[in-house]
Image 1 (cartoon, one colour):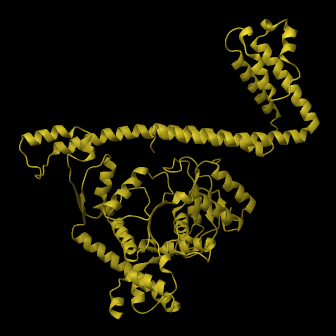
Image 2 (tube, one colour):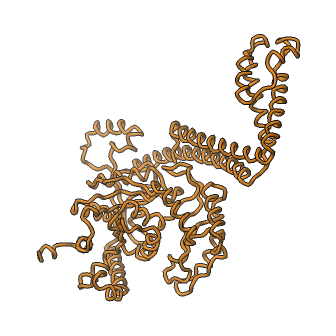
Image 3 (cartoon, helix red, strand yellow):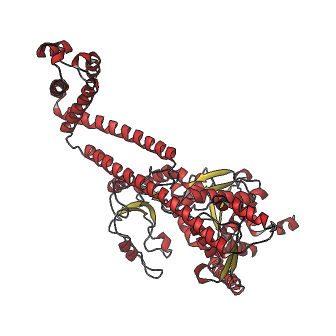
Length: 549
């Protein structure tokens, strides 16, 4: 048994300790949570192998969760590429999840935060908030909006969600501690307004959760047992735990975010956070400093060897992607080198007449395994990429036009809705709706032929379903000396006049205040129903014509 214990690596020791302390084996669950705002790099590979490897060792599920909380930078293209790379590495996820799956739950929790006085809407500019943030050695200053009433915060937050405000006008902040030594705990932002098209939710949301708010709560909703991270995420752990504290249910698994390098070294000396919490906390600062120094030393060793050498297995449709890969070999001024290898079977080559090149090489007797280097080939690839980028740019312009139209429609709808909710007298508007509806009915029934050809019996039956008419078709015909004396304008004006009279009589029966309230309720119900139908139709249209964001 002792030999088996020594064979465990430090991550397995953390898991084994949790199992020993009561965590059930069937509650083990890991995850790999990339943000779909770019392509995977070397650091991602280590995280993939780490989490999926633990899943294999412990026969535990591993979720692939995309933390898609920033539609301004995320694209479906990145989602597909990440999935493809994980499969290429030989791993398979248990569940494909998205932070966007939890947008409604995150919003509902944020509302509860406001009700409990743990979050507030701040209306300052980003520059003003930056000044109040303080420094690591100087405490921050409370926002002048920190003590807004719960009612005002709830109203503003809902209107943020409904798209009534422009980007940058309001944010939702957690109310924690502006004097905290951890800068991330100084009333961090939970939500910001972003009127951008989301690759999964479309235009359903006008506010999006910040990464720190969505990340830990997504772990909790998926019941992730272990959230392993590297040193760069260490300052975020306190905020990760604070957010969890506000929603945690003791009947469920609480995710543990662990910075495993320092944790392992301390526990290797026999100091456990469970059995020796005081000693563990005392050892923590020195060990973190030691691990940071070790990482810095490793970085210097890589730099001294010439930096990273990135091998690209294909050229991509976008030069931006190739440049991202090149950039990995020389990040932040470090040295490095990159080299791309191309095949005539690559997607980019297939789109631009690679068969002609293949016939030429075959005729020239050049072996298949012989590499060919030519500036002409590089220039041809660059030209092909430019054409693809131009095509994609036109697609994106159409998406922007679509989003702009939707935003203008949203402003009109929510402006109308707000007027109704604020108690505006809409009686004249209702009368106009009534007149327009009757005019549309009459125009449709009298569009073709002469008066003798019109199906006026059907028209009167349809209008009779709207309100109780005080006259019949025979009465009108008698008034003008027969059906031939009827025309569209006369019919519309007589029916509208009669409808307004019936409406006034109904208002007299119900009393004006009751009638005004009834008008508002009916209009609000119809407005909401028609708006939802319109959104569904626009989503269907977007899918049908293949708009890509």
